[in-house]
Image (cartoon, rainbow, N blue to C red):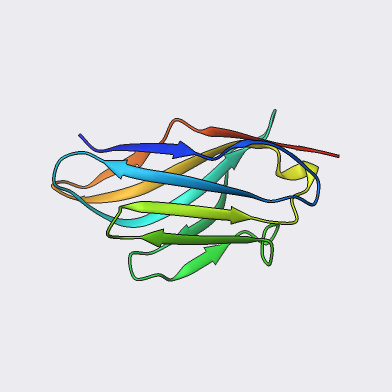
Length: 118
């Protein structure tokens, strides 16, 4: 069974930077699109960024120009470089992926907490 494991969260001051990582591990598999979601306290989970297997990216308007999503297909890892962080970026960040082999399945990581202090 494929698992997603996030890392890189923490506490940072406003204006600072953090880099999140999400690695997929398990038996033989293939993953298509990968995404980062976040959930702020008391709010619904929202899509932050996505990247296709071919490298096409898309971002929420609130993070455009500040966040960069990238991936290493050889390592089955997706990254989220976050810069110019704001207190409203605080939340639990979740990695999400579309497994297509050996079967179609939606994968979720356990989440990593990002706290931006003002």
